[in-house]
Length: 417
Image (cartoon, rainbow, N blue to C red; front, side, top):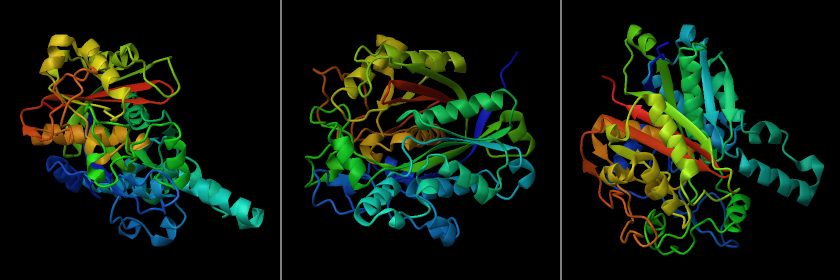
């Protein structure tokens, strides 16, 4: 039986590089870093001083301020991204379609700043001072629930948590739901905001974060570079409207690209580190290509997970070589846009899939900035598009993400022909 084709008909984003898809993409093309000194909280008593925060975001531009006051930050970003995606797809207010639309959202952690505030109030002032909305705001499914309530979405509403693979896996699960015929339209993506003192300290004690570039934080995220020392915490949301191809054509929808394939695998290796052999991560890439019906030579661009950590970057390079073959891996244009956005955890897979769509649409390979001296001796020896992006035809792209616990996911995105 022939698979139902799934296309992307709308996108919305709130990222460290802009409060829209367009603004984010223009800053990606300009090679701009979204990493800067932290403003969300006072960093005077912790080691981490910088992050990739969302900037100049006003929730009142996307929702009633009264509703926003009952939401954690990650939910506000998700609602804003969803509204932009629905507007972009001409579905906002189309209740006939929204009654049968689903939502699949990836969230790694949820309302971490709400957890922190509630715990502090409890220990300092007792149980009577814990905010009454603590639980509804911190739980990861709050974002999907609020999107449904804000826009009248009455189909299934699912939230999944596979750490840093969450946004990618949400796209893959939504793809399968549309292929199965359960829905014709599904909002899919990810959301995260964990830039608070408790979260930053918790990641710091794992020795995963960069902290030495205080004088110039824009240089801190440097995937595949010899001087990389850890990832930079990011935040934001990206939502894509996925739609069955014939359904989209029938209503005259704008079509960006086709979500053609998805693959997932598990390392079964370590709670926080990828399998250094690359075998586990390569499996999800191979499965995604098989699902999409493409060969390694059909793919021109790979958006890397590229976290800027000592362990991830060489392991991912091995994954690419296994999945694509040594010869094809050397021909592939690879970049880590985390060099600009930081690592947005549960949102990162959705943001990077959105950037793949824009790369295909705009015929442009984004750069990996801050790649001044590739760590060739450490195994990072492919074409990571160092420091300056370039124009070029992209018919097919892959984005892959790897999360704590050994969760691996990859999606293949194609031009619609």
